Amino acid sequence: MLKFASISALAALAAAASALAAGPTLSVSATTSEFAAAASTIFRFDDTGQDPTASIDVYAPAGFGVDVDQPIGSTIGALDGHISTSTSIDTRVTGLIKNADPVTNPGTGCAPDRTVHDAVWTVNLNTGGATVGHLVLYADRSSSADYAARIRLCLDDPATAGYRLLHASLTINGVFTNPTAAGEYRWTTILLTQSQVPSPPAQSQTIVSLPPKLTLARKLIRPYGSHGRKFVRLSGTVTAGARGVSGLRVQVFAGPRAGALKRLTYATSFERGRFELVAPLKANRVFRATISAPLRAGPLSRCERFALQPDAVCSSLTLAPFTAQSAMVRLG
Image (cartoon, rainbow, N blue to C red):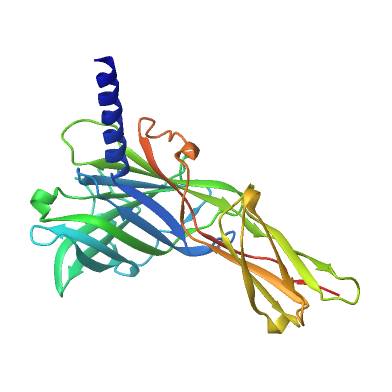
């Protein structure tokens, strides 16, 4: 009996973990990893759980610049997503994100904490020449040490809206500016579902580590003596913030001079972000490495408690994309 109870308990825990993993998540990416650079910011939302999402609160980390003074009526971005309806389990939708007048869009039902929000963004969900839905996002700056800005979105119950948002990629242009100081910056998203049963909200976090850095060193190798064939050993390190990053593909370029570099080969970073390769020297005398790291899943052990929602359960952690380029190195 005890053995059966233990197995049942483990099965229940596994089912709960599976349901948690299948709940709503959100990740954040920027199109540049340079200090103080204004970028397009991409928010990727996924919801494949049994309970549809009711609200999304995205908190930009303190240290990011926030500009919400775009002209009323201007287009600040775009949405590309997928919805399900009573007649389709997967329909693609697109739409432009418009800057609306905060005075005429007070957000009474969704974001009643402010009479007038700093910015209101609207987007129609279009498919096949028809509008099937409408989203409103409320953006507010903050002077709190906990976050720089909050973006809030409420989603109607699919039973009344006629559709459910399953996936969405929202690109917001010219609003967020990267920090000016090195460090680890954490975007935090709180997601509530339509469930009638009270439960802790889900939480997603995306870590932006600045600055990314790629080093490159070279060494001439003559394994067969001074008159034998020449090789070059190229090695370096990939870091984001103060951490080495493993499992990334590094492109190495080579050529006879700085203006004539061509891709030589690839290398993969391993423990602590180090990479190394050996190549025939031939006519190559100048070398450079580049990297473009994609959005990556990170361990939930790196999640941190969010002061504004301490009961939120962190079910998704991602590591932000970045690009980096080494200095050129020369032989001879």
